[in-house]
Image 1 (cartoon, rainbow, N blue to C red):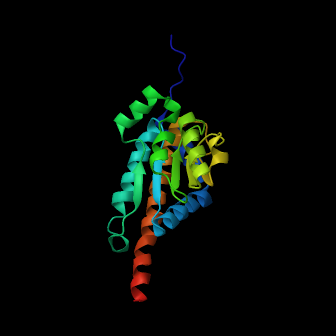
Image 2: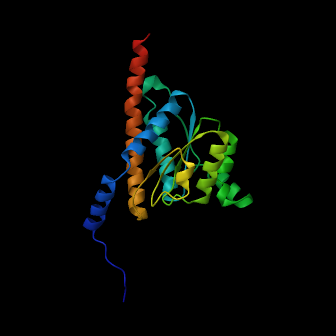
Length: 201
């Protein structure tokens, strides 16, 4: 006899609604603003995470890179998902440690004032923490979205938006929504920037 408790859809979505209402909206806006500052100064954004967060890293890089391509006169966002190069990831995991798969990629590229954007449900993934530590040493800006209490990642980020939940599925659902809201805030501000620049010519 199974001891599993049946979860009704209505209960899940009610919890999702409650947690969404308690999101740190100011921190989410600040992340968008930091990304926009990086864009304005032609800095590069590196996005990374594990599992579902890896999927979101790739998704977010696509949204920011392609979704803003026609804003601001076509000036492009410099963004790269460190989750996308499978041969490089497996090489570092095999020859070094899985904990190094993102930090070692960053060593090839990251410059002062670039942006490391970490995504982690727990905030305690070693490879995410190592990448953030490396980024901080270089003098880049660290941004992050996480859940639970923020984990060790929270203290390594200049801005960290924490989903106030201990349910990984709720956290991942809201991370996607947060990423979309960040994208919309960024893209909505890029077109007025182009218009303002044109008016000064």
